[in-house]
Image 1 (cartoon, rainbow, N blue to C red):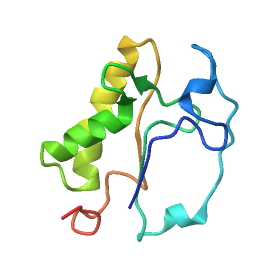
Image 2: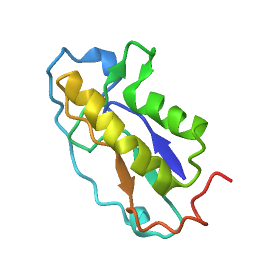
Image 3: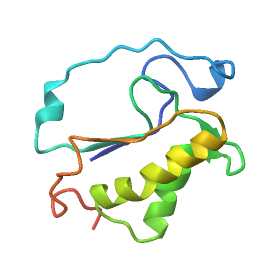
Length: 116
């Protein structure tokens, strides 16, 4: 299981871009993502920037991920379903598009990708 809250791979941290900047991104086809032995929750789509949640002194995604754990969500599918709308709604309030991603998708077997 992998959880990632990063601005965009290989381009530095959240704070190096001016407000409103959009990164150049590449989409990589990785055969490992086709495996039924790995699950990934990322903070945003590949062409989006993960934002900070300055009120909480954390990344927006990280804040809601930790909130999901605190609220007892234990499977990757449950965590994702819980945080995705919260991150998207809070990002919209900041005038940013950020949509967490679950790979390979919601069809993950819950007994296999659980924190219990």
